[in-house]
Image 1: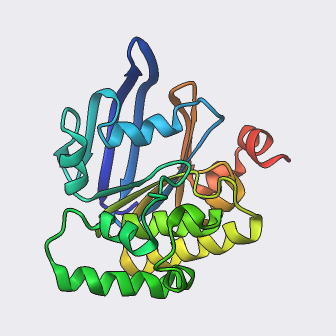
Image 2: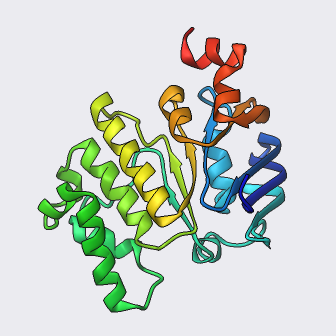
Length: 238
């Protein structure tokens, strides 16, 4: 595994008195793609929220050796994390280009921001064709591209993706994952992906974790996770 970028150790998270995570240990290496699998309600989304300081958390979450637990979300994001939430979360009343500029809110390098906007239009040509269109009127696949490009406008070290394939046709999902693979390879952006399409996610990731009732029950290389009998029956259907 590459040098660790993100390290979760003994992470517990709760909404009020309801504990959701029960001692999560998880690592994402520099430039690595890791997938987090599990049933609905297992704690996948809460894991991403805990990294971003969006839920009450205890334990240790370190990014490049810097402790994140107890820090506000804005402070964490400025350290190099971008979060693409479930359901895309684009700003429907803003157009495509305005959404991208929101993604660069913490940056002051104006010329580089303009260059990055054009860069992501090149990666996602549909966005370039619709740069003046309101995001709320775009298709699900286009909104997902926009949400990812908006996250990348922050030039993150780590991209958190929560169910990027949700509601998308299979052909669009495969194209989207191919683009994510290119971005990871060319930009060395580390990624932690929560995904229901286990087969596709494991074909893309280098390692995987399976979470159940707030605890990690299986981890290993993508091939090891895919080859586990219980994993195949529960998520891959054979």
